[in-house]
Amino acid sequence: MNLQEPIKETKAPPEQVLDAAAACFMEKGYGGASLDDVARHMGATKGRIYHYFSSKSDLMHAVRKRAMELNFAVIRPGFDSDLPPVEKFRAMAHAHALHMMERQDYQTALFDSLHLHMTRGTSTGQDALVDDFITDRRAFEDMFREVLLAGQASGEFAFGTLSYALHTILATLNSTLYWYSPRNGDTPEIRQQIADEQVAMALRALGAMDPMTKDKT
Amino acid sequence: MNLQEPIKETKAPPEQVLDAAAACFMEKGYGGASLDDVARHMGATKGRIYHYFSSKSDLMHAVRKRAMELNFAVIRPGFDSDLPPVEKFRAMAHAHALHMMERQDYQTALFDSLHLHMTRGTSTGQDALVDDFITDRRAFEDMFREVLLAGQASGEFAFGTLSYALHTILATLNSTLYWYSPRNGDTPEIRQQIADEQVAMALRALGAMDPMTKDKT
DNA sequence: ACAGAAACATACTGATCGGTATGTTGTCAA
DNA sequence: TTGACAACATACCGATCAGTATGTTTCTGT
Image (cartoon, rainbow over all chains, first blue to last red):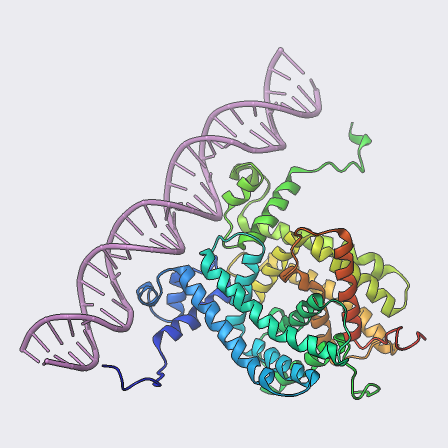
């Protein structure tokens, strides 16, 4: 029957629901945002939400899934490149840092959810859904972990414990979620510069030998 | 009559309420944790909470206040010392990083609250209370800002934009909130090592000349 | 010994929220 | 034209929650 549309990808309504949910979860937190809030945010009612999602936690899971997909898509080009570790890391880190500023809603919702489920308490949803989301997160971290390991092996990086370094570096790249707000002067150039400086700091933190070590800015 | 106890510091009941609130707010988030949850967590009922605090947001404000007091107290010794900027930063950063791991409950609640009020929406409480809490946070950051500036002026630090560097470094030192969990092998030594490595990475990120590679001036 | 206040617990209320059941409208194929 | 289904809106329900009102016990000063 539907052989005519295997690639057709219209702006599906569920996408709008996800956007509204991400925005509300970011503004009020998962527990603080009601489904009526989400519906009101997109000028609709709860009926629309429940037409596409079976529960609040299911909606949250969809938001997490979407956020994770975006994360993977953003760093994959850099990861798949055949650059040396330092340059590969630079590409991945820069893309990721930029992405954190451009999709604060999804990323904030994702991290809040991640954080809630790590500090014990599966209070918000089901275990199974959360588990494979933790698995995804692990896979994402592993992409960075692999690059750090390669760089360490080749002597381009010099850091201590891999696990600590990895988490700390990711926190560095995510840090804009906690202070950057696209206010008045939110030109793309500024975000570019922030990402540049963050990557530079991350590289120094990793002990990357700066090609221009004694360069002054 | 009470001349005998000017320094006596009994474990005041409100302190227990704050502890329970901090734990619950961390586990379920501010919106997700009910006051009955908090009461149950300390084996009491809501009556006890409302005997000391006038509302849920008032309780949250008290938790924030307490967390902020702890933050100041922890870094003040290093800040008040007359060490050179790099060593002063090291002392402050190390104490702060350790503190993040030891008081995850209060700090997580504090950061969640901070984050919620920065991503717009004063949905959780009153404006006035939040404003002077933002002021306190600014004051805390300024203590690090001052040290970074001093280090930059003396040539011990070499970073880009001060504001970006400051936020990124603080995110680095706070990063344990998002992955460290006092699990099985949670000896104080391990926390000490984590803090050490984090400070080392922060110093490299700030462009501090490593005593290993470059002799101290 | 006794009044009163501090320190809670118990019982209740109005509002809100997640979820469901049902109604309404547009679309499209036969 | 119709009827069947998708895509919602509307109305409603039981549970939960912040907040309050009121009891009950323990401490305290006099």
